[in-house]
Amino acid sequence: MSVQGAAALVTGGSRGIGQAIVRQLRDGGGRVAVLDLEARDGDGDVALVCDVADEKAVVEGVAAATERLAGLDLAFLNAGVGGLAPLLAMTVEEWDRTHDVNLRGTFLCLRECARAMAASGTGGSIVITGSVSGFLADRGMAHYNSSKAGVVQLARIAAAELGPQGIRVNVIAPGTTDTPLFARTDAVPGYREALTARTPLGTVGSADDVAAAAVALAQLRWVTGQVLVADGGVSLRSPIDIAEFLTPADTGETNAEAPR
Image (tube, rainbow, N blue to C red; front, side, top):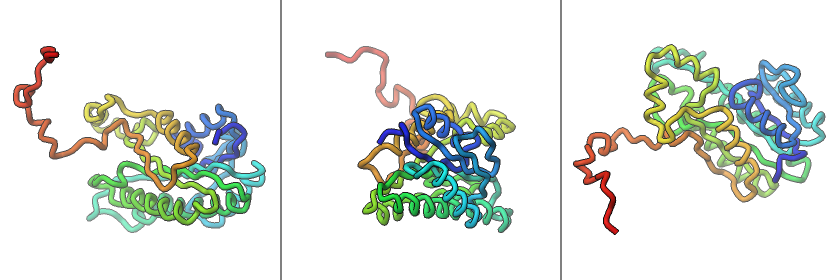
């Protein structure tokens, strides 16, 4: 599948990773509808204000986007929220809002987009933005991590159910990505530098890096129910990696050329 001429919907497409996905789709010749709380004219070919946690808003928004694009081939379910609160201090409101947007909102958008694709009879491709936090244990982020773990299982079940109708469902799992949300961590001295040092590729990923992976994943016709990690390798870091405590002498490493 090429994005040339494809009708695509992107939730949370007004900034960050979603905005980069919109830009790359349009650069590739796609027609894009953006659903976002802060949707503005010019965000895509169609811009619709929508709270993904609101069932009525999602049903109407996806229907309007499908009508105005004359179909729906691709959907990128990217809208999400985060937060930081230890379990003992976390409020029900914080928990519910995170799950309402990240898990309930993804379910609602997935259901409506899949209905539109099924009605067309031509199938389609859905990519959900998850996170490496969905399989890591980040203190203070129980609400976020559990919501992102949930979308992976949702995607796997959806892939199994919708496959016979030609609809593929996959997850892109970014690590830390340089977006406006991540910029808030610059208030924590040394955090960005430490994270960069922990990443095998030696940098914090950009929104365009993750968007490119998401758009590529959407086009893989023989892949469904899978999670593609786009994190520069940061999730490869093991807290019990003994190599961190060894010197080159301990491991027998040397700069000398090996004999041939």
